[in-house]
Image (spheres, rainbow, N blue to C red):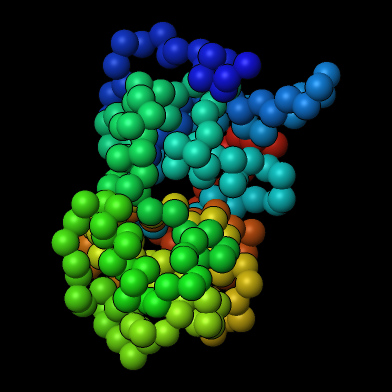
Length: 234
């Protein structure tokens, strides 16, 4: 059965926008045969615009699931997710693709790059998919001006993450969703990547949500939202 057919439409007719990203009584249930795993249990939270937020919690608490739902990569089993005033449940496939290409950027542990392409080509392709013109200053802004011809796959882990952040900046993504972006980095590179994310917030007024289990990352953000068993810890 398609995931969309399992979605229960919210009772209200229109979601009222309060912040950049809102979860309204969101459940996510994964089914494997007779087994059900509840990843999110009535998740309610709001991230304000231009806020740098960390979703903190142990493995299996629902952090990454919440991020994937906000990216439109999966659908909730029930509840509603609203991004910049638009309910994701009301977007068709074409609108969701446009949302992912223009409104948001996703930074995974691996950087979410095309490894065989150069740093400059990664930026150019990202901009082409978003329908935006080239941004010559994006690499310089994040300290990668001397790496523009180097293949993304040959960059260091910290440089790959900065390249993914530079791509988000180049296409003016309004929301950046970063899933454990510093998990594979040493402390020095972790701080460099965190500074790049703060730079996004400060210079471009981008909203940033980071999934992490690192206390060092949590200490560097505006606000920490702790999750446990698929819900916010009060």
